[in-house]
Length: 489
Image (cartoon, rainbow, N blue to C red; front, side):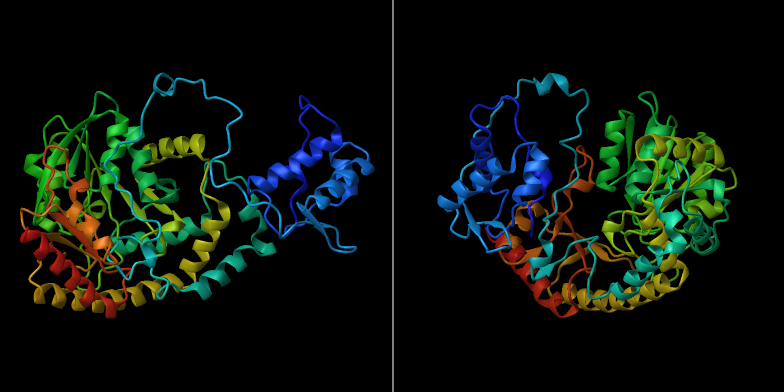
């Protein structure tokens, strides 16, 4: 592997001869770890031309480094970082400048310190990962996704990949959503009423930015999706926490001054509760009475392998007050970051303008690859495959939870990919999670889903989307054993 010539430059304020400066650049690159052993250096001719010095100056610098065993020479092949070169230091290199900025004063708005938990990036190395929202490599259709990506990279689609859509989206992806995805949820829409986003979270952010101000009030479920709470907190609007029960959000508890209601009626996050038809009608009626809008996050509706899902709340909307948020990231893979928002045309126009000012549009090649994967039937086949696998994993997990007498607080009626669990009152699931990690088990503590005032520390979430079915019983057994150990303290 060759070192890029663009990494070499001379500092006009540096002291010493040009030869010494070149030697220092290369030696520092090796000692800092930027240049690795065995990497090839640019030829003396190319480096001399790039730096604007004579070739003999570069050759002499290389020769001196060769004598000191920083470099080695391989016949006519050129110069390489020596396999015997000094090792990079184990300590942090000394900074050449000091940060004189008072960042406590300079930062005008803070985003750190929210409720969103940090999940281990190396989750896949754990033997029992009951982690929500990660892709199962054994289920994903790599071969057809690769073929769709290659098709999208073909000459016929060159303009779709390279054009600046500005505030528009891939028409093929929009067409699939309009003709296939939305009708499955009972929704009829026009192209002007759909916007592609970088996942559902980006859609929620766009929505909050457009609809909320510091004088307006947003109602959210409690417990709820923790990232949504962070988004709304950052918008500085007034927050009203509405408790959920076995049927989800309770409309009669929504305060009359509420401007926007955020809800997950089909698959409440994190309890998995499904809002029945009568309550959906009641929620729409309550929103109409107080003249509020509703943002419906319809995540994971594809994972309905126990019963068919109810039509989306948006499909019952007769006043245009429901904004619908969907995502392909849960059913394909989280790194895709591709979602969509459906709403009345005036709202979508504003969302399109805001998106354009921040990121213009999601990458064209991602949109076109997804459009092919969806329209060629690979997506539906993948969803069916995942549904069958999740159904069997759910059965095995339910049996294991029953065997070890672990309490399920919310299981959902349509499927999904996780259970909402309740440990005994004395158990702190954050401590439980830390103890389980040393036993190769990952769980998700539930405290971050609750508001600060109603925070409950004995809830946790167990997902079965990323764990092999044969490991589920042993993983559940380890969780039960650790809870028993904590109870005996």
